[in-house]
Image (cartoon, rainbow, N blue to C red; front, side, top):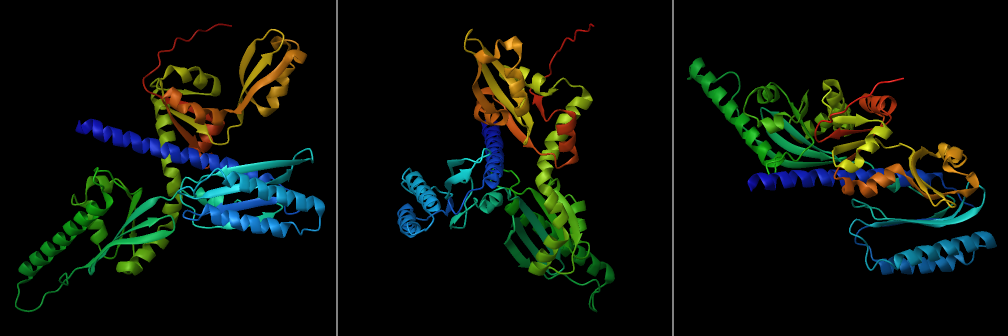
Length: 436
């Protein structure tokens, strides 16, 4: 029972992380789409409602803006702005109250690639709280808030120690928090008169070891949760003298925390000043942290290939072949992969063809005679393959993992393996046929 409980918590944590990664990918896509839109005049509305704000207050504000916009001299611009405000008001009627993380709305008239006006609207319920409000009419959508949502806030633990005490803190994004701070009175290296050097040295080492044990206990209480899981992405050990090194080298510190140590840094101060200095000195390690998870899963993928374990597939065709089998445990896809899932329909024969194509390949297949007369062919379905993976991943019982090309491993995966591959639950037994 206990094992099943722990396993369920671990699976839930993986699912939570998958949901976060998918939300981040969706925001990236929407940001790119919205950033490319341009309009005439000030007909594009960006509205951000933070958590706790009242929908009726926003509706009242929009009514006032509608009255102001009615005085715009340019008839075309006036009608566009009024239309956008009405669209926002209609969207807000769908909500009785502001969602728990806030609400972001983009509505307006844009100029499309054919230089024609087109009305569009996007509503986004953020996956984490937004702490700002905004109302702007402009000739573009303001997407800065979306980029801030992309900053996945890793939680980094800090252990700051010197001969005067210990500070335990965390850094979450750009916010620091002190969890524990205490002082200690350790004897200096040289004792006072009246004590033998051996006795003094023994007492000094006892107090020093007791201090290290205390630091280890405090670290466990703050960095390991009730479910016995480490609650930080990494740990920075910092201090003056040899305290930090002695803690790391000894068996005093919990092994679960030792595996999370990212860097050990020398600092000139203890306490909060030392906390600030440690953050500054390990900034490079912290900036690289967001790629650690990606590097790890890709290293696991490459290791399966190197071992020739049979627990891997790569390439679009091979990976899709095993999608319905339930054998795929982790599906790895490049976050910018531009394949579409296309269903062509022959209106005369009523036959459908499922294809996976890039945008520029679609027209060539419409002209391909093997599918019939091109005048009889039409596109029945067309969906970005990544969107289709997101919507259907649960049907295949897999974990979907987006990877970038920003790390050496990610670059190798996108260029050398087609940007798609999978780690399998058990080895494949494949029979290869050879022939001319």
